[in-house]
Amino acid sequence: MTKMFAVGLAILAGVAGVSAHHSFAAEYDSNKPVNVSGTVMNVEWTNPHIHFWVDVKSADGAIVHWRFEGYPPNMLVRQGWKKDATLKPGDTITVTGWQARLEPTLGAAREITFADGRKMAAGPPAGTGGQ
Amino acid sequence: MRLPHSTRRCVAAVIAAVAACLVVGAAAQAPTSRTADKPYTPPRTPWGDPDLQGVFGNDNEYATPLERPAEFNGKTLSDITADEMAKIRATAQQRMLAALPGGRVRGPDEWWTQNLDLSKRSQPWLIIDPADGKIPPLTPEAQKRANTVRGSFVRQTFDGPEDFSMLDRCISRSIPGSMIPVMYNNIYEFVQAPGLVAITYEIIHEARVIPLDGRPHVAGSVREHMGDPRGHWEGNTLVVETTNFTAAAAYRGANAATFRVTERFTPVSADVIAWTATLNDPTTWTKPWTIAMPLRRERQPTMAYDCHEGNYGLRNILSAQRAAEKDKKE
Image: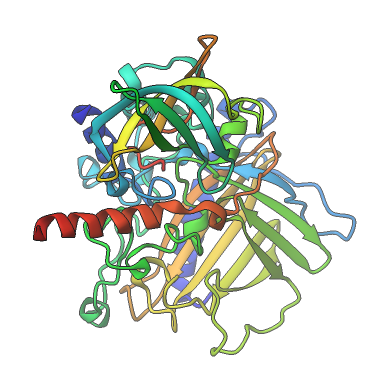
């Protein structure tokens, strides 16, 4: 993971402009991978990034409300997503990504696995600045 | 363009050379392109202007270094061999792929390799003038200016919204920033009407309306993040002079009062526009400098990017900083 982050930074270091909307590293920690499963409660199909909420049952049975950030809607549409269809409340999903620097239930989503096994990219690799 | 004659000749020669390279590069990738020995003549609008209309993009130029990398010290763009360019392209693509999970393309990530395809990069670096590929030295006046560079990519601490860049804040990428590719939204739509050219930029979704009727720039007291553009045709090239930037939006800390950007949009084939931007501010750089890249025709429309509607990133970063400070005190 650290190596992946370093590669992202190496790419950033030489570019003419910033990589995308805001820095991944300022908000998220690439050393804190997240892998949670639960039920989608809400999807905000907004710019500059979508956000979605997932209720995850913890080991003690309590419900933890996770919030994830993903790509902008236009990027998702170009990769095959459909608003209100691809990801919607009630869906059971597994999300992989990275945790926010401090907020324990905020994450940068990388990939979503749906109940039928389909996988969709939801956000950029850590460190590429694509948030 | 307010440049000495000798400089103008030099810039014009470099631009012509780069445009020729772009034609050759495009010819290798697009069967409809023409070759440099037969200059391309674009179609005309019903009122007789060269027709540049359509959607264009420059994803392939993502992450191209602005300045000449150290490994090419002593070389100019024209010294770069086809083999060296092939290696540059392959390395850029490999680096991007290495950043994907597992270092390989799978499933939806294939989109990236098709649309952010660095193996089609056109140049090893963006600065075409001066020939050494380096930003000219800062003037003594500019060296004394406070460093005002802000943004989530360059700072470690954030006390308020002012510590973020104009892009972080969904305000503007200005010019030439709007044309320098990021990870996505690198597409631009050109629309023409008699006496006007409009360009929309997907990222931040800004629009420039460029008058071609020779009217003077607005008064110096009027300032815009995207500046005040005025255009004219030089043959088939659209030349756009932009001034009156806000201090916050002036590129790389330029002095907004004296900063001028001269862009040239030259159609070099049915699917490629050669774009250059000359950055001139005698109070910031010791001489003007020029960047270039090709814009390639896109088969997809531009989309909305209403950046303000859910910009939680600033709030999250600021709240994380405050929480970290609180933890330190306790």
